[in-house]
Length: 397
Ligand SMILES: *Cc1c(COP(=O)(O)O)cnc(C)c1O
Image 1: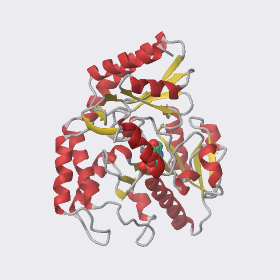
Image 2 (image 1 turned 135 degrees about the vertical axis):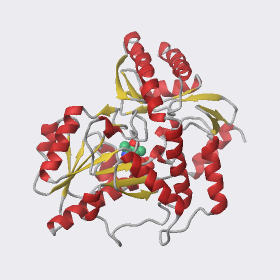
Image 3 (image 1 turned 45 degrees about the vertical axis):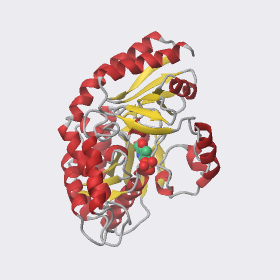
Image 4 (image 1 turned 90 degrees about the horizontal axis):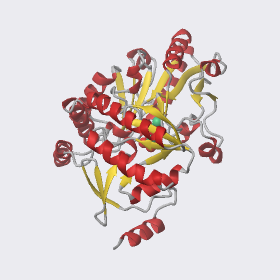
């Protein structure tokens, strides 16, 4: 089959929920992807912040193959070794006390919401608690996650969603305070808003929210699904702020390509939260994903990825800032580490599509942001190559 035939075939079989770029990917090596025609692409999207190690990492592949040879699934009725190892490593880098593994980011959000509600229920002896979420947030597509997602377009067709959710403006403490009531049990937001347009939390906002939560025993839930796992130069983005969430979520790069997510919490929360019978999953935390997460954690340490991100991000930021200087339609750069956005007054969808022709994979965020979330293993030469290719595109806009 040729490329067009593959695309036609898929378009007929799959539910049309995605407008895909006309690209049929075949395999990857390092920070490059190859399509079925053998064309090479420099990847600055990493499967949406998933492939932190780049493609075809030998040690990672071997760990998965070894686990496949042993056992991939056991159910959660029994203990298994890989997930125990994964959990220990996750808790060590997250400084959380207890973790639950899920199959996706959205499910991690579902679990985090349930954990917060159960905590407040145990404490107060009644239900009917409220959650404050942020405008322009993104937490996933399941009904619970959608309930805390501040994007009317994603939510509207599916209403009524979970009740008791109030929205405030991100980085505006007064707007959050205005939504707090006696019933508020949790405040949830992304440490760096991703889909909404790459907005990092401001330090003062984070500190004030953290203080507010402590004062009123409101749980702070930080969504680290996109910005976590080393992407900002710390293992989790909240670690830049000198605060600690009560509950946090992870996914995307947690498994580097294997579907896995997690929600984790402090012991103080866990004591009053989900107990046997309150939550469960068939696949979540099976030996196969356990082996993947465990190996990912090892490789992050071995490759000193957070240090590498800190170093390479300085260079990426300075090169992107030059584009802001050079092109009048590129009006700003926002981001942290290897999670960067360029604000464009020209259509970002067209820029991303034209970049593909140049052999560069970039994505968009919000209505006007070019998003870059490359593998964390990129080097200076890849930044240079990206800039050259992107300039070719921008010059023709
Ligand atoms: C991607 C994402 C999710 C949802 O994760 P899925 O694995 O797609 O369910 C939730 N929150 C944030 C911040 C994300 O970027």
